[in-house]
Amino acid sequence: MKSHSIIPIFLPELACPHQCVFCNQKNITATEKLPSEKEVSEIIESHLKTIKAENRTCEIAFFGGSFTGLPLHEQEKYLKLAAPYVENAEIEGIRISTRPDYINDEILSLLKQYHVKIIEIGAQSMDEDVLRLSGRGHSAEDVRNAAKLIKEGGFILGIQMMVGLPGDTPEKTYTTAKEIINLGADGTRIYPVLVIDDTELAEMYKAGDYEPLSIEEAVLQTAPIYRLFEENGVMIYKCGLHPSEFLYNGKLMAGPWHPAFRQLVQSKNFLDKAEKLLEDDPEIKGFEVNPSDINAALGFEKGNLKVFQMKNTEFRILQNANVKKGEIHALHT
Image (cartoon, rainbow, N blue to C red):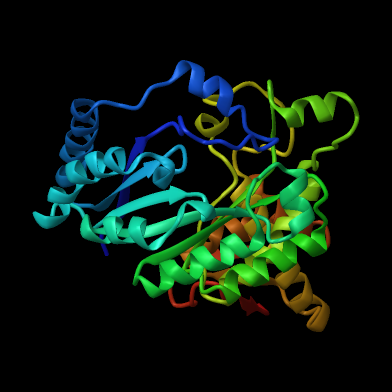
């Protein structure tokens, strides 16, 4: 099976009329400009050289802002650059991210014309109070309407959510995840809220009006929704942020950033499942998992293994390609 790559094209949202509390878009608007057609072509060609050499599949992704918030002629300019790569079978498709209130039939018709395959919308929450306190400028109903149009248009639907927004609770977060599933999302991104310098959230934090989640709290809140998405066949495109994604937007002041946040979440879910097995059968002396699950099973810095070995120094966690992904095989010898 070939590995898959993304060719990322960053398009700062220069026209966003909203000011979410966690975003310092005003600074980005003041300092950034949209890339030229030449720059975009060079990015694509540069990535394709490596991708072709390594025999990988790929797609072009327009990220960074709300793609469909750009004027239609700007959207079409970039789509015209990317579309021939789909038509020539050099890439599998095009992916864009946008706001739910920037989706309508005219926009979807344009995206379909130029071979856009995946549309991700930033819901962040499905709770009206959380959306209001976060300055999102759209409603949960906007998310529902956009999701319906996207699915009816035959696109792959991604819905992004955040954990730890102002006014949020574990219960509201879980309800958001359930509604994302019910809306027919094919994929999701889960982002813990970080406090970035020069944002409204930073001012709230400094005034004592907002307290970010600790890493432990973020993992505890994310683990059950991660599990829920997996159980319902929703692909988790990303869980946590890469440093470049927030350092680009400003200095990190506070919040649950960890270089292996996704692994922490996966490890927590494995630990919960494994401890239940041990509770039901104390004679278990180890586990076997699919090789793709070994990092989650062992835990970050082998944290899970250390937990088990505190009770049994001989306890082991092994790889076995015959074990199905996501399953745990108990060892008794």
